Image (cartoon, rainbow, N blue to C red; front, side):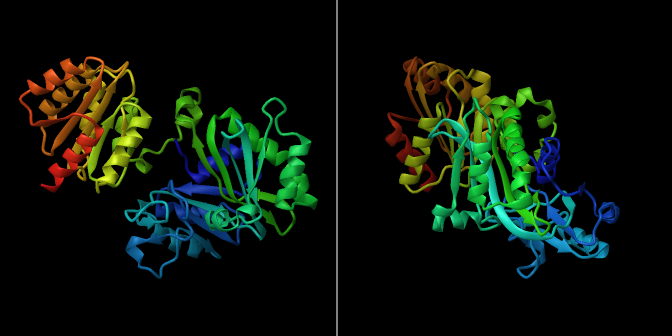
Length: 397
């Protein structure tokens, strides 16, 4: 689960992190009052969408010469002007894809005198089994290029979970970021606070980009991105309440209600599989034969008939889907349960595109019998390769 920048900053402020004053707004009419509540005279108007690269993004409706999704304003009037252009329009960034995301809220923040822009993130480093700080002196919008072109400028400092962030860890992070003076003093409280927030809130990612050194020498969190472990959200009602469903794909929201692992993609073949590895292999072989998967959908090992039917209905609701491939290896999941779920879903919503089903494993013969006797236009496949060939051929026919 992701949250907006202004929500992430409010959470970090609760842990003592230095953030600027800011106000989130939903309507243009709120912009003037929001700006007047800030010290000024410099303001920053920020689009709030769940995607990076906002500053370099472009609004579809405003043309290629328009400013991006993060704008400076030197007056309250300019704040209002930016709000009028940004709210309700579609921002396209490197992370949104061509469709972009509609900007439904803005964050109006007090400006900062920036001396240096740094990069700081926390994530689980699975190579060592610890939470690690990933830092660089090259913060800002081009951090991906830095990681690609000059990886030696990216430093990783793993944290011992028993000791937490020690003075030695702070010193190592500060050295990597070339901090001194007031910034080095701020680091002694900031980095332990970030680590504490990451652990206590069960985050998957905490990214501060940029972390700035201001002209007065102090540190400030200028932008913040957070992603939370979906399996732990039940422990954090305060985090759950921050969810913005307008930023999520409607199919993914419906899938989450059924505890389905579903991710919408841009292809035209819908996939329903049990097991993440098998799902990845299924998507790979679809690409091998020249088509693209429309989704990742793992129904899990213990799904019942209703869950399978729900997954099938979510897949068929995608207008891009021109064919569906069901690939099930029955272990805990029984093939007859899958077959019953597919038949029930098809009978309810109809079948407007080709459907190929490959079943193998527990109760496979019973599953095939259910499909064969359903009277529905379902094509059976012997193995995964056969299934991929058949669904691609059916779409191309």
